[in-house]
Image (cartoon, rainbow, N blue to C red):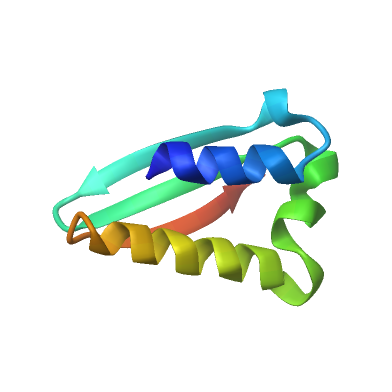
Amino acid sequence: MTDLLEYLVRKMVDDPEAVEVTRRDEDSYVDLMIRVAPDDIGKVIGKSGRIIKALRTLMRAAGLREDKKVSVEILD
């Protein structure tokens, strides 16, 4: 799941080397945290938050395969 999110985000940004995705597991919950270069935050969020909403939807669907509830956050 982490690899999928990292792959998708790296394809969106100008500085793919700065992309870092960390995962924190707690019982049936998974927190995925994305860190990107400051100039790329807007690309990951998208207009009106459309891109991050789509990423969250994809990760929730991927989480169903592991019976996990997934949240995706962007770190500063």
